[in-house]
Figure (cartoon, rainbow, N blue to C red):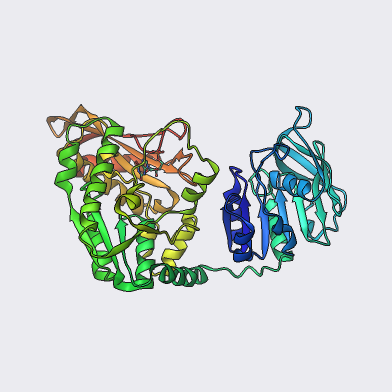
Length: 514
Ligand code: XMP
């Protein structure tokens, strides 16, 4: 396996992404954690130093342990990682000045293309790369040679072939270095990786790790009905069987029939012990009349923890709490320590719960990206219709009911949403769309049906395409589709007499209405 030492670049996880695409197993660890002992224990087959925001010219700036250079494994340094390597090995770095700083697109020209790292890379004599550096290398370390230059970085690509050390000033992992994946491919090949890492082998490793961690103790898993917690639960069950109990806090804010589907899939199909805490009255009672989105989230989050804790306390001898934490969640907390500067929406989660309950965490998906979780789900035999489901927010329909929440509105919303999703599936569009749902609006409008006047709710349809939910575009449905769907909703759902389509992208909108 390959070790990526994270010096805090915002794009470190993309390095992992590129390597996974090459079927190479890698892990990212923050530099603070990577000590000589850690390295000896991890025994990497190759190491990558990520970029980072600091300056190597600053006293006390982040470093890899010295033993990294004597393990005898190939190392690739990127941006800050390049400068660290140069300085550690005897080169000279100069602090940034405005005329030497370089941000954005640049072109690298080869000075010697015989370097195995560059094989097949320089297709047209020069390559577009993405630079982002203030400091620069002004003298390379002994043993290194220059293989590529750019106007702002005379030492854009350097290497010490005898030691298998490579250093680049740009970021090959980002989209703006269009052929950067080729460099990673060459690097892992020369490090001896054969690209045979698969989900099946991941699954076997994960099961072994869970068994080793848990022993004969009991584990509780909070099930939300979403893909992540479900995959985690099925995987853990495969590892330790009935030492696992799932707790499904049913807040009554799920989509039509969804709660029943979750319960029957886990109980009947997988035979996983499941506590179904049906608490719709508790949640909806507390939410009735609440209209502020943040108060809705906080109310749900607090009740969720209360109910979960109450149910979990009934499981005797539980020592572990399983969570479907994914890789991007983990990385975000390293690279963006301090967190985003403003809270747009306070996503409810069970953070703080394990300490409160004195439980240790089991997080078998910590190293996976979303699409890899789906692949693991397939490997575990979860049905495709379940794995491919659109994301659904923790607070559920409560945040699709702008304004005051009432039982009546939730009921209407649930029916309208079911018709809409049915339409999308019938037209074969479900998998093209990242997320689709109906929001019921806090306004009644006048309509005419037959000979009568109606005075009912208006609703908005939302459908977006996205890669990660961070940005999104509205989905360009045909007018025929929209017209047909509006007619169906108005005919089939009592309580709605007007349908609109939301054509806002994110930003400036968000995906959900609240
Ligand atoms: P926004 O609305 O912020 O949504 O563009 C981005 C993604 O996050 C989901 N979302 C939530 N998920 N708790 C969650 O677990 C929340 O409070 C929450 N709010 C939004 C949203 O459905 C979309 O997939």
